[in-house]
Image (cartoon, rainbow, N blue to C red):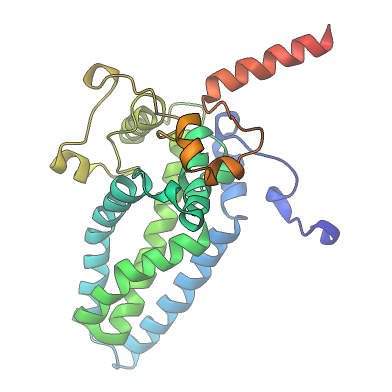
Length: 270
């Protein structure tokens, strides 16, 4: 820890790119990230309270169980809706407040898909979303303790989703076939066409609603897969994201940026 610059552990001094990391590197980064630490703490506190209440008979067992089951069922649908209709919408870049949030939690991730520092959702956006999506259902099914159980299940599920989302961006094929398939589907969303495969780690709702595709043969290549439609022309009308982006106009294609960086390095060495 470097107290003078408020830097802690793995996240202290540089960018980390998942395509250059292995699973051990990811695990070290994952458990040191502040949002993951917060989710773990919240799940421990809420889970502990619910278990205590179950133990002394003040919490309804069936209500708590139903709250957890309902959260697990509803969770993929909520994130599908948010990903498709909010993060891939065009209204967030049109307003100063929402543009900053959109850039942090989605635009930067599509511009630089393997950059670990912009892959994790921000705590100030993710935690309220999880609470709003889970606690009312839990309260209806199991009262106060049902709401706590639902929140606990929601943040645990978030941790699992975030970890597998990171695995999808690691620079090797996972050993398990189902994880390889998950990775292939999510990479198509990032590098081929963003207008489908919104599920991130669970594509059930894509299949139900017709937005699932297996690969390049099923969808045309999208010209906006990296910038999500926010280009120089759009920035003239809605400049909020461009003002927050260093070196604008920014080359949002990560493959091209690597080539440009390599060419610049060679030129500097000559």
